[in-house]
Length: 308
Image 1: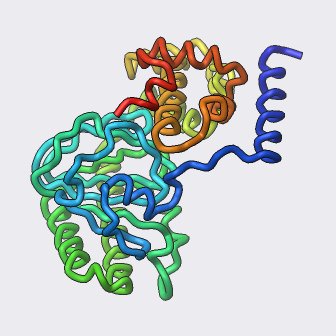
Image 2 (image 1 turned 60 degrees about the vertical axis):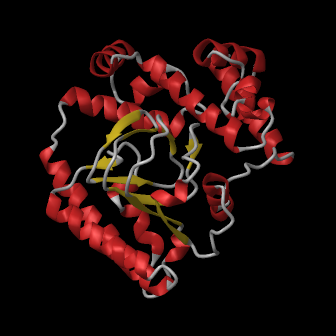
């Protein structure tokens, strides 16, 4: 068997053992617990949504990568920040709309709080009859590989702002919030597609986008360039050169970075052991992973976990 085949066998054996003896579960998988940890507050309530503004983040947002187990939409009225979601970094400026779907890892790259902003965090349970939350999976701006920061036209941003103001005034009434949120999401879908028609990608940019989408889906079990080049019907050399030319980083470096991004989230957001995290990320040698982590982050995984 090849080295790759042996790695796959080991990976599936480890996952089978984990299935038989489940690892410790993440602390923040549950919506309300995550919000309590993030906002340092117990005043969260029990609805399937939470309306937040600048005052909600009195102690600042987490400065480490963390995975969303809910949906989020935010409006930025003033101030300027930097946000990373998955592979991409975004400048968040006034009149920006932020969208993050379930399962994405994000990190604020600064701790400067905006002067004024509104956001709603929610799970699919916010939608009850006559709504069906299945439509959430079809919304373009919650999918992999999209622009998570949208700059709509002024008239469209103001329309969203009005809906958010109505949601804030009625936030104690789940049925009203549900209807208004549905309207906001449909409006945002219209805005997103209007923006997409303006921003046409080149062939090289499409290759990079498709490569990054594949990495998002498969990086836990696939870290070899050959897998991704075959999926895209390209030679490994052509894929590597295209990714390097467009992004300034090699394809191998992007795979490594997204694995480390996930590792940082697990170290801070869960109570999994280092060994459990290593196996979860698809490695079979903790000492090798520790070496890679230290070379890239500057500290060991355990030291990173202990950082405030």
